[in-house]
Image (cartoon, rainbow, N blue to C red; front, side, top):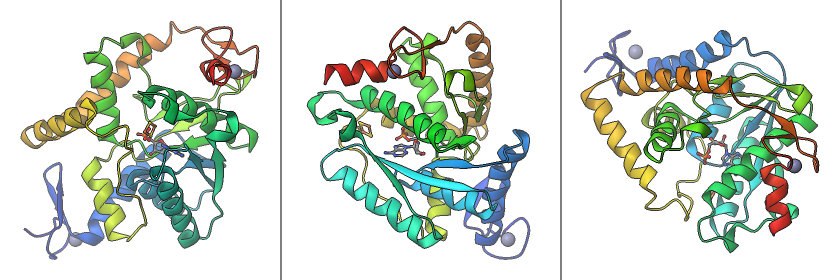
Length: 283
Ligand code: AMP
Ligand code: FES
Ligand code: ZN
Ligand code: ZN
């Protein structure tokens, strides 16, 4: 198969067009640019690097657009896995000429290894620390490497588990709310699928950790993601349509959410004390 834009051999197909390596990179950066332009992203961005392929690709792409970037990594203290992730994030920063800021979850007295199912605790801690880091470093945004496959899988999982009131993260952009110390969140690779992020990372020879978190192995969401991708091959564009539908649903639900300030830390909370402060107390 030949590239739609030139005569070279195509390496990937997306939405009915085939791309050679050079034009695939242009396609990828074009999708990132569409998020930047649509939400008029300008100013300092804290880039959350997990050490995985998606946030590596996201950081590399943002760097192409000459933003003021502050990359950081949260070391979650998960044996073997976390150190490997940190090393890969450090390698990427060295390659692109940045220093990596590292936050250690351990310093907040939280040990994920103590929990049988740490994923939701980990999620709460990551969201809190990402926002806190960006806020304290005067960043206008936190950028994460959530891609289209992640967004749709997460939303579908919320639907499947009946967790619809906690429906969030479906949009590529979430406005800041500085009264509640909430920095704006942006997902620059929102329109790109798992496979496309992998390809971008491979073409650019980006360092990234290939391992999955040991707590996520065999997670039903991984099977759900596989299934969604199978459906996507049969019905190209399905993931994008689903993401847009979930995005609209979230907009409707958000109007009803009441925010407070946590009486312990002063950051945003749904109750009197935020989930993160409750976690710290328990440990
Ligand atoms: P996950 O929650 O693992 O699906 O990751 C989604 C996004 O959150 C990643 O693409 C990163 O941008 C960010 N992220 C996840 N884990 C970390 C971490 N340990 N440190 C910094 N950012 C992270
Ligand atoms: Fe959070 Fe695995 S439990 S990354
Ligand atoms: Zn081409
Ligand atoms: Zn708090």
